[in-house]
Image 1 (cartoon, rainbow, N blue to C red):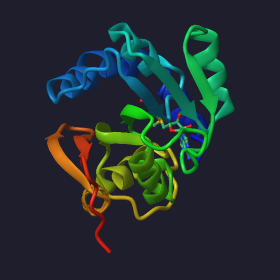
Image 2 (cartoon, helix red, strand yellow):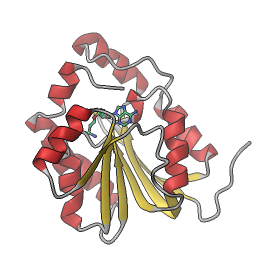
Image 3 (cartoon, rainbow, N blue to C red):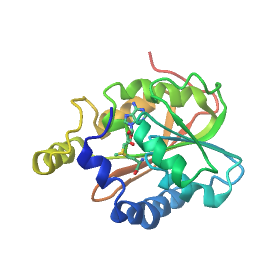
Image 4 (cartoon, protein in one colour):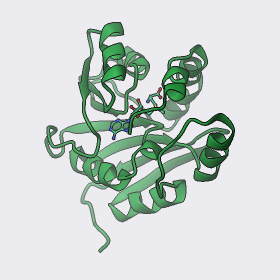
Length: 198
Ligand SMILES: C[S@@+](CC[C@H](N)C(=O)[O-])C[C@H]1O[C@@H](n2cnc3c(N)ncnc32)[C@H](O)[C@@H]1O
């Protein structure tokens, strides 16, 4: 879902960039994020600051996608050397099965009421043993945040616990989990031979 005007502007603020650079990326790196020579997909890449940070480590390929044209326009304008697509994350059919080593999300699933479809798609595009790095806010924090700041997140049954359970049911192993004041951060790994719960 598209961001409200307030959130769109907040995502382009210096504090957002500072947090991503000095806080979120280093935590993911401590969890094992290493994109050198890897095929990387960033979902909900926004204005491309994550693309800039990830590409400092020379991935083999990088694609950032976002459903908002306005975000991709900014990303392309600022980082014309990287690949960006306007694309809804519930449909990753343009990416082949087992075509990515790393999929990364900085706070996006809570914007997508059909977030389970996105996880299914990530499961499909990751290579066996590939890693999914994701950070998302807790449901209660979101509601409090919206109450005070009116960012207008969509109605959704998204929650950290539900996401964790769904990841496991789709054959992911939760390798790392870290609570931070705003987000809970995860590294989940696609099994070498995925087993699905029925
Ligand atoms: C909270 S912003 C985070 C942006 C960026 N990842 C960051 O950390 O600054 C959420 C992003 O997810 C994008 N988004 C929302 N729904 C989406 C969907 N269905 N498919 C792809 N991107 C989506 C929004 O357009 C927005 O750029």
